[in-house]
Picture 1 (cartoon, rainbow, N blue to C red):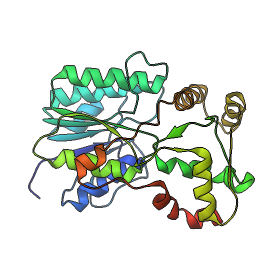
Picture 2 (picture 1 turned 120 degrees about the horizontal axis):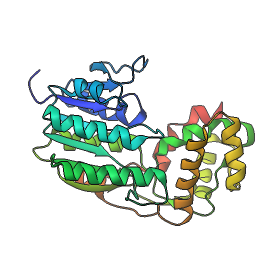
Picture 3 (picture 1 turned 90 degrees about the vertical axis):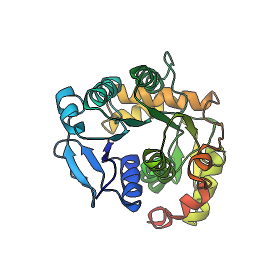
Picture 4 (picture 1 turned 120 degrees about the vertical axis):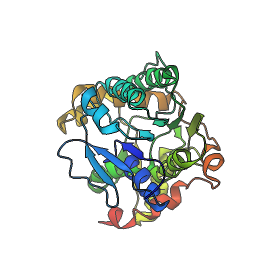
Length: 285
């Protein structure tokens, strides 16, 4: 197959899989970079095992790559992974990078996720590689993490108060990323959101309609949520990072709505009600 060699780093996660599916649909056979031993192998894609914590492994995986979708997984040293990918991209001669960042990313941000992405965004810019940065809001697919609590308590338990969040479907992120990877040029920073900002009471109401039973939002204290996460085996660094993220929601930092998805792809982003309809069977079981 002719055309540029496109690699997808972080290909085993929800966003990476969405990007890969869209590239395949467009007629490409992307090179998917996955952790050694990962069982998540995308069909119709070339699979390369890569340890992003190791620069040599990262460089080897990027040799011969023209364009890269750069996603680094949730990790205590996420910035190290980003730096390895940026450095290896430069040495391997990658001609375009589309980086997944986060809405609110900024050097010095109180949220460790936003700080590490902000530094990574700056360093990619300083590297001089043609690029675009995608900064999505919270994923609609995070609802899958709530299913055990919904089944046990008919509740979404999150310490977010009355925060409004313009959640986005990962499939829209995948479409936007693939569009930029395959277009003639990619440049700029894009804040990606869904078409509306909902509070979690409204989210619960939508899920209630889909499930056919009442589901509510419980605004638990951060300490209560931290205890629950730790009892489920979530490490301390991840607990702290998630609580910092929830604090940005409460501060109103996730309620902006943008037109970036439509600007990039030519179609509007999916709304939450349409997404929730696909969860009907899981919510009812």
